[in-house]
Image (tube, rainbow, N blue to C red):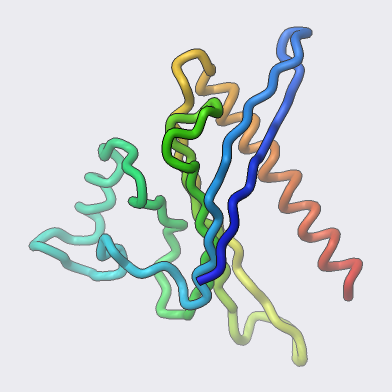
Length: 158
């Protein structure tokens, strides 16, 4: 399993004031997909259906190494990239963790081509002084910008 540490710094202007936030992430590659430590793929586990477990999951407090899942139930193979803030990070997040999931989609591209589904899930727990709505909005905006940059890079390379 390959990995790296990455220091991410973001900034924005809020009500005329420059604001920045930073986090140091452990980023790991899972070429065969992340192991299903929490039995997301099983229809029934410990007497509870997947739907019941999904409801309970939403009420769960954030926990290190209990990564969010990009919920696309599929028997297709996946490749994942996980990211998690390092323990005792001095940045603006008590916990920041997420997963990028890539799933090949056979038969969904023109002959000779390939198609891939890219999904993303993230959970954050910002420090008390950070407004949650602002952080969520900023992450959402940056995600859109990142996906556009990936699309532009791929289409230029073709």
